[in-house]
Image (cartoon, rainbow, N blue to C red; front, side, top):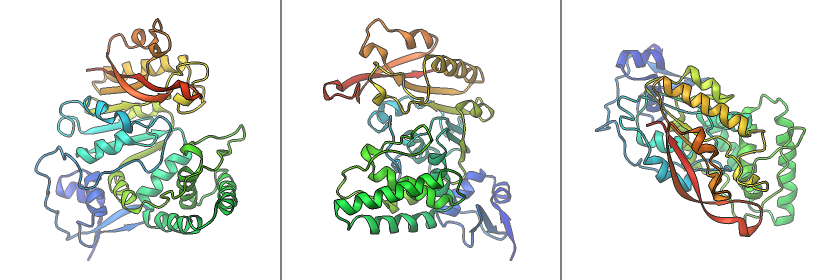
Length: 355
């Protein structure tokens, strides 16, 4: 018996290579196995029957959620974003791109609901991207590492947990300086996210993670069921560590793109509303708007999120002018406007669409 690649199987069965990878991950192709980072398939394997009645999948059997908590996560406004999905998604629109993927709430919603031929995600956070890749390519090793971390950590009292946490944080900071042990790095990334203060990701001037331990009593460090579902949906996804502009090579008239950049701060003290302190200021917001216009000219369907400056200054029409040619919706959200409790509460955010 010989073997063929996923690409060869896709051509043979007239389906996308990504679909073949998903079928392999779901154990629906008898004899398929992963060698390195690629699937190989018996050359006499039969194409599995397509159990999907239509291209739109509706709700998945198991809800898939982001595998990490991430600043600026979109879970609370997901219904609003979902209402902006373009008509024809999964039919005429066969590609999806998310250049600021973060925790991926929108990504996993789209992948759970629609069958797409090609998917592209990216982020500038290399540790986050390495975690996505490990979940896609090395799931069993990752689950084993996370299970060990969970079993070691949870029985400890608070004082011993502190010692364990900071030892793992130190180890993580050694690994991010250039280790090839991607699975250990990914497992520690997820462990720290689940156990640090508020799920923050912050580094010091030397690039080292410096968030203190949180006070969670019983954090779920190894969420095996969800990670397995995440891994299935990431099969065949193009995962890139890089600037959003690199997505231009992928985006065309058959692409739906969701942009979730670092939000424009609502006030001097509102760093809590932004993803990071990475210098994404007004100049960068203007550059992003120009890029969105360029991708619009290609015929892509585009939705973008951002903060609403009018929450703190009714005369601040920065985004209204910047995206004057697009449709702007103001939606309700609950965010921290600043670091004091009085600054937390209901605000509006912007959803910007080119259709």
